[in-house]
Every structure is written in structure tokens, then in C-alpha cells.
Length: 122
Image (cartoon, rainbow, N blue to C red):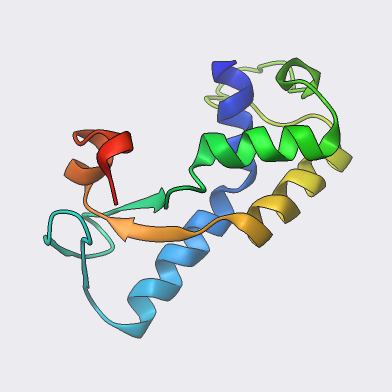
């Protein structure tokens, strides 16, 4: 489960990086909607805003594909590989497109992302 979710996160990491880049190219700083902290590209996280949390998106995509989590193929690990990678190009493309169309991303503070209850976030 952990490796599959890691592969799914990795498959959309470029979307997360691009979102962050675009947010800070418009203005130099941002404000965390939860803590009010002033954020820069170097002291922020990107969050999937509720109700479209990452796990919610995964669940919806799996249902749309009529598959189980265990049906998501990941590559065998190799030396110096720290994250799992989706092995099926069609699944990878489908997931990336689904994420691009459905994810609602936002910039938040690391404290809000890691310390505060995800269920309590606005």
C-alpha cells in the first residue's frame, strides 16, 4: 500500500512542483490559509484541499478505472531508487490526467500540513 501510494504521488510530483512554481511566480510570498504564516517557496508544502484529499482522489480514480489498489503495478526497486514508480504507462497516464483534472491544490505551512489534524483543516 505504502509503495503504491508513493508511486501515485511520484507520478504527479511534476504537477505539484509546477503548481508551487506558478504560485510563487505571481507573488514572492504566500499566506498559509490555516496558520496565517508567511510562506516562501522554501518554507511551504503543497496540500490537496478537502474534500479532494490525495487519498480521496486515489479512491475515486480506482473506482473510475474499476480496479483495486493492488492492481496498480509498480516497478521492481533498483539500486539507488528511493521511490516506487508506476510500471504500467496506461495507468500512469490515466492517473496523471485524473489528478490534473480533479486536484485542488494549495500552498500551506509545513506545520499545518504535518502537525494539524487533516480532518480539522478547512
